[in-house]
Length: 252
Figure 1 (spheres, rainbow, N blue to C red):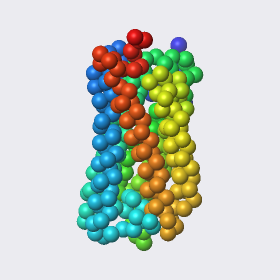
Figure 2 (cartoon, rainbow, N blue to C red):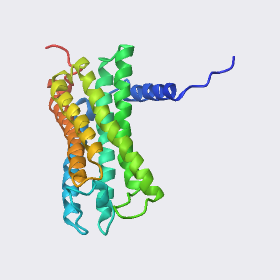
Figure 3 (cartoon, rainbow, N blue to C red):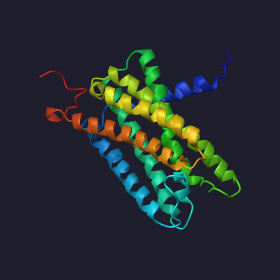
């Protein structure tokens, strides 16, 4: 019997199922069970803010209000911002892995429809993380310079990554209500995610203006805040008495 070719949506769905299965293995790692893995994204967010501030103070002194953050990767100290892009990608992907591992281990999202909605958010946020790494590989074009092939790739990747970060955070937050370990974080995380979507709309409307750099940094800050908040929440709730997670620990 001849196999039927899959369309792109079906291929993405299969990939998402494999991602969720990998994150919900039969044995949950001790670091994830106790929430310790979430120290990595928290430390990554702090490092990101520090490196961003440092490179902003160095030549050629781009304006944080007018100029895009990506411009910081062009110049004598651009390698610092390149490292920071890689940092953002790694912290985001580690966070996503820990989140899927934590939720997938409990079976809270056992219903097919719920799994599908959670998978979509995870794929979107994965685009945010992978996109940050690609931004490091393809530097942008600073204003008043011709558009290059790597600058064009940078722009497209940035748009896709920003959409994935805000919409992914929103869709993931909507699923937190079905997880025992994330139920308490749903309201705050959803509020931050909604703000990130609003900030993204403002950013897209102000791109290229004299406040484009500021709106971009506010948007990026909102997504990083969402990561830090959810990580801190899971870190605080990660270890129940006896080393069991709040998700897997039964009633005492």
